[in-house]
Length: 112
Image 1: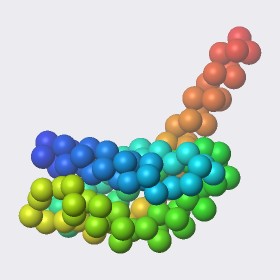
Image 2 (image 1 turned 180 degrees about the vertical axis):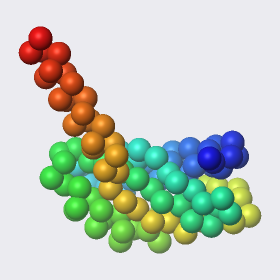
Image 3 (image 1 turned 180 degrees about the horizontal axis):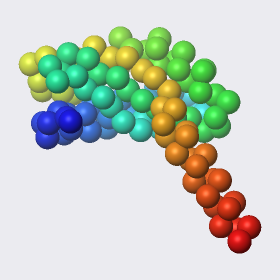
Image 4 (image 1 turned 90 degrees about the vertical axis):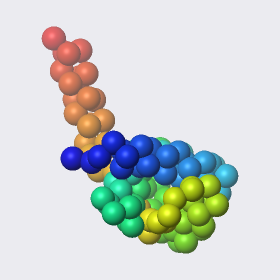
């Protein structure tokens, strides 16, 4: 379980990464930062994202992996912390699965 401080910092990092992506990405797909997992020592941050349309996920992943250093520099400018986390990015499969379950439940309710 993450501490309250860790949760707050994860949310701040999520907001700053979303701002960075808003200014740096093209308009080919919508990239949404769903969550950030921050290690207890604040040295590593894993950024999870989804995209619309779904077929652009791997393109967005390649873009974000290329921009990891730039994201870290952006965080360095805006975060006022002693330790700056190293950034990694991953596609949020959990969010995609949740959306699929919601879609199936909606179809099931509609059929009743």
